[in-house]
Length: 179
Length: 195
Image (tube, rainbow over all chains, first blue to last red; front, side, top):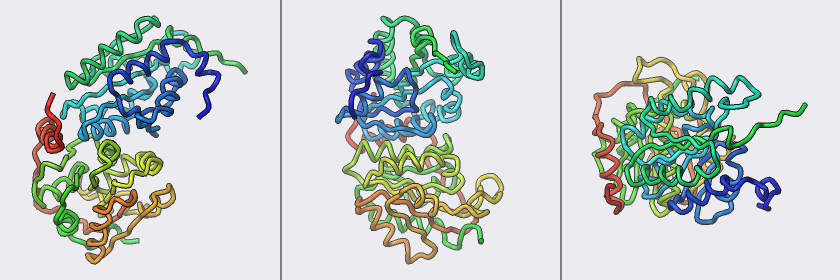
């Protein structure tokens, strides 16, 4: 895939997401696309040592990462906050087997959201994750992304925990809606 | 169309697991887990008890992490219906060592034998063909089982088989429900230590 302009000009924290995952020996990046993840997805797809899998719905990623871990390999699930709701029942798989589950969630319905249909799930996403036993951290400042994700990866892979880093809309920036 | 089929699900699964060798098995919640358990518990089995719709995806993750081992997902038509999109995800990746076996009785057997979509006209084998599974089998008699077993072991192509089984609730053979135990047992059999 040719490098795209958006990737070349993407903010550094987007690159940090990929670099932290790579340093954490993540071998599988599974995702439902979001603009905030576009750099990490592009880099993962281009990396021959990483298996990238596009999903039809976020909960597929939980099953997938459980299977990869059964086979001895680490992975991460990238998604948007709307996908958190899709994952709820499937999180039982992590709770009952305690495999490392690392999620990176770009927020919608969080701040400066144009489309209010994103608000119900966006506002409930972190509470919903915590209700299901997922440890969560929020990054609203670019400099927090790498350390928070690094710490989440440690607690997922060394502690068999479910960990989610939420990337706030203040970090991602206002979405421009042009008619 | 007639829902499901006539085959004895336990005989089918026992046939697929005969001389299993290096085979790793993931089971969908409910009767497929009991069928695999009834054929003999094994360190290379991972049984799901929840997360309906996830069995095939667990199989995909495992198959891509361990391309050197044959991986078979054994699930039911109802479980796979909840993971319908997963079939599209799997068809795109198409690992050669992955087989999906859908035991199709045309019913939601665990919840009172309500007719499922598969029992009311949806044919999974046609779905699989349409979304690009390179090899699809429809097994309606026991003579179809040995060739399917061979295909599972051969690791020559992603494949999906729909096996038309009788709609009946057999005595349950309950696999262990301690998921951490089953996970660690499975991983240790592959040479991985617990955390």
